[in-house]
Image (cartoon, rainbow, N blue to C red; front, side):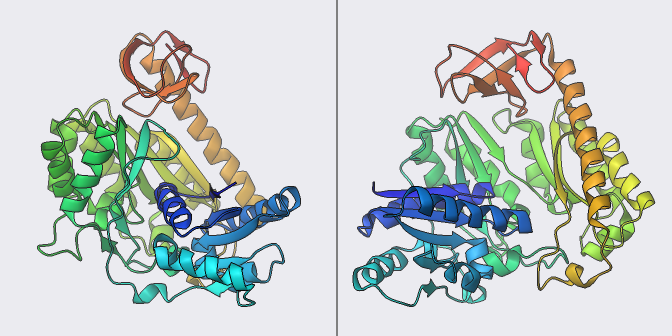
Length: 417
């Protein structure tokens, strides 16, 4: 066994796990399991701790290193676990020096486990170019941005990721070109606050300009997708690309969080309900077949049943297909954790109702696809995804290919082709 990286959480972590594997192996680590953790909810942290305990039982000779957002924000908690040999900070994890230091610490059996630097002191991003992904998946991620300058009252992530910083456009284009040449059919641009891209770079380019540069300078790229965005920051170039270039996939995932204006204000979001509805209508005019998803929190502090109903109604009013539902989870140190809390049973019930609305919306989309011909990216021998990110049950196809398939039906969760 060399280095095994287990990833929790977001697409950005998935990209960084590839960098971690490269840097840790390059530093000479062996018999090492790296937990790349997530801090977005209490459940995510608990899952990481459970995984650590299970792994140590199953592989007692392996060294366990914890990194990621939860390691950054709760480093001492992980260091106090007997199963953990090292805790590495969220910026440190992508630098070879941290992994060389870890190897040296293992060699001398160092007692101090924590190697976590001040994330708020990080001001720039060095690009990490990958020739390919160890996973060999046809869809891979490219990190273009990290951190967040906003302080939503429920969110711990800025304290795990630091302030917003961007990868220069030239380096992003080079990375996309390299991955495309290696045969990865679909590239997903990812970041913490993707639509803040470029504010820290010379000239202040925006996400839309980056998207246009990629599409212009990497003609061999088959499919470009962008991960979660803040709709209020979507720029004109991004909207133009959505309207004009078929290689930019007709699928957006929006950070909406709530459908009630008072809750949005208490969250310190920068949009209101009508902003979300108008944005969804605008992109649907530009790309009528576009599929929209969203993050919505159930049971934010002070949320009444009437306020929740506005979030529930947003699923239909915005025409959402994919819903990521988060039962509100108080994160220590955030302003929302000090607000009047909604009862846990009420939160669970509201999350259930939101998920049911999401399942209904997905089935509606699946039914509308029957009879269409779609360009399906074959992810595995049993599943692919359409341009709209709708899952397709398949059989006997070669992973990595993009095939035009006739949609013949659905099973309530996936299309049949």
